[in-house]
Length: 307
Image (cartoon, rainbow, N blue to C red; front, side, top):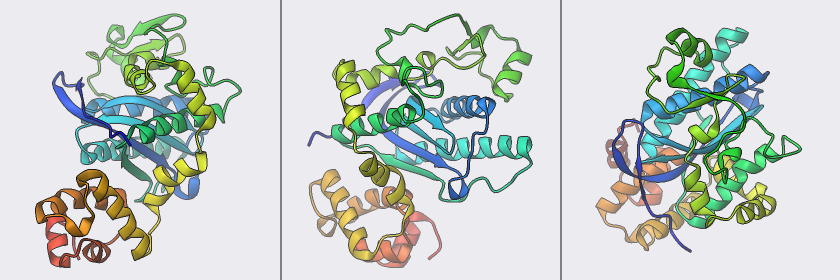
């Protein structure tokens, strides 16, 4: 199985970084409806881009549906990707609370981040994101709240667009619901004031993943196992596993990262792996200690959490 290599990309701050793909998902408390009208969808898409800009990560693609969000990001590490997801949650929760006077939209496990470490996983994760759009529309290209139409477009937008840099400060604040300094972005908005994904998404990364073939992408979208990807990307990281299942998962990741089971890792390798497992799994210090064969105190010290 081919492992995803780091790519060098120019980041929002203008620097070039070696980055990896991550899947970020966001859902409401008890799968609550988080987008009730077109304004909500538009705001959540814009907050995805604003937060990626703020946290210095790149958006590959995304989809927003009524009760959840999926984003593929390029980030230097999982902590950076998680920071972006948490900021999206924070901003949108404030918007939702202000608009509907309702609190507790989210809970502490509503943001999940997964490193996408193989090309099979990457292609199916992208297909899973786009399939969510297709399942909410009769035509994937007409679904307005996804990054699909940026792919294989030749970098062209349909219809009239305006650069965000041409907007006045008041227009930017009104359209983006923020005071962030975004005049230097290369984003485009259409006649309805919505962001054009061709100006916000790294669609070239999608095209490269599918070897420059839109037919390959569409075939994968049509054949992706939605239940399997839902389990891998969304459900499993939010469900506390029994020790046997958890140890198996940790060992599989250890084999992918280091070509050795977790029991054969050096202390330094365990210290590298621990934060990732902690961030991407629903687990405890005690369970981590059992899986890694380490003292609880050492685990807590590495993670800087209480036992």
